[in-house]
Length: 277
Image (cartoon, rainbow, N blue to C red; front, side, top):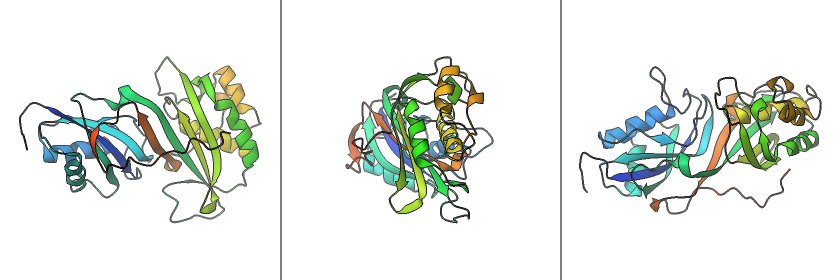
């Protein structure tokens, strides 16, 4: 094991977390965040390590199975060593599911090809104590075929200006949505899953999409609302913003995945052969 004071090694992590007790991914001075917890865990092993760099700045309460995070370190430790050592310094809501070697300065944001988000909607008139932290409970009966037809307008390259929160300052609002799928969870017919794969997403874009489709499905928005909003660029043409607890970052595909990964079986794969709605 080699130790120096200048970072000489890069590490790429895949991180899963229950976002319920955290104020989002991005570090904040007076709040508990995913990045803050990861920073503390990394520096408990190497006090000279850099701060972590994440692909997606998930909101407070949003979850992940596939967040990608990198950092630089002075310590020559293999992927298995990092995954197991970090686990000892992280709360139970955060898990390192993969660790690999990368170059110093590697930033996963710069090599991200696409992201897949899943939004879980629970159609139920009563609460479920096991799904309350990971789904949006909707008491109305939803018209799934109507929602699926509405979602077709999202696929392709569009200006998604209407599908972002006011706090998003970016001028370029064009995004490419590659896949939209609306399906029932295989083990629970009450759960409706909305999965969206795109090259990039705007701030709260996925939650606004979910809210609009649910409002169409329960009759609060007229069909065609998504297409009208894409044409007008106006947030007023859409419905509510879905709450954060139903959203999960499922996967981020990078053009570089690092070397000497542990576990060597790369995370879950999204089956892209399924029918696109």
